[in-house]
Length: 218
Image 1 (cartoon, helix red, strand yellow):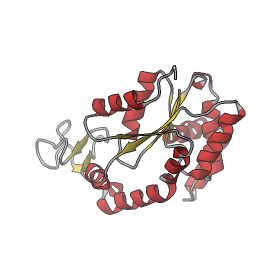
Image 2 (cartoon, one colour; image 1 turned 90 degrees about the vertical axis):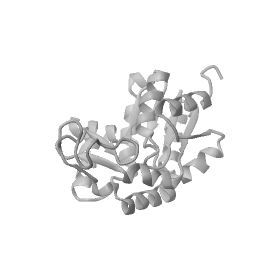
Image 3 (cartoon, one colour; image 1 turned 120 degrees about the vertical axis):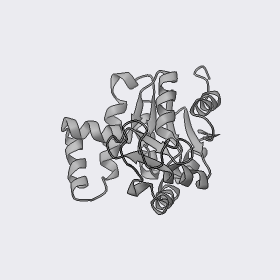
Image 4 (cartoon, helix red, strand yellow; image 1 turned 180 degrees about the vertical axis):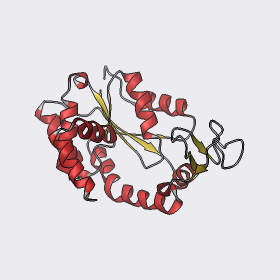
């Protein structure tokens, strides 16, 4: 099964992608992992990406597309994959179609995780990170520490990352609406979009997604 996962920041795409990929026995291919792997391995695409990133420029679509193409051609993705963070815009979506069609393949579904904008802001702006260990994450509403501003695990100071501020989150949402959201209409025209609510417990959302996806036999 070949799936694209879309949704606004704070929709829980990374978490859901990991669970869905495991349940479907297909690799989870995330843009972040692609960049990290290519840069750490010193691949030609990784070197190109790093040059742009070091100069503060956006990495061009063709570099991201090239990384995704290489990853989708690996043996473990022969029977399918779950794409998380790619395609990010219409140009990437069209390129993905071209790549798949060249091998006589196509997507099975585009899973759209739907979350109200106010909930997105609440989820992200309420996050607090530990200065001693960034893996210790709390939330002022959903997972508050026992003592305000203090990590339950190591006693480190909890803080709000600059890119988690409400203003920054709303700017990220604007970028999502202008750049990524158009691919939903693009895929709707192909009859591929499956929209589910991303509200609720992680396991509930995962089950909702599994139930909504087309069966492998279909």
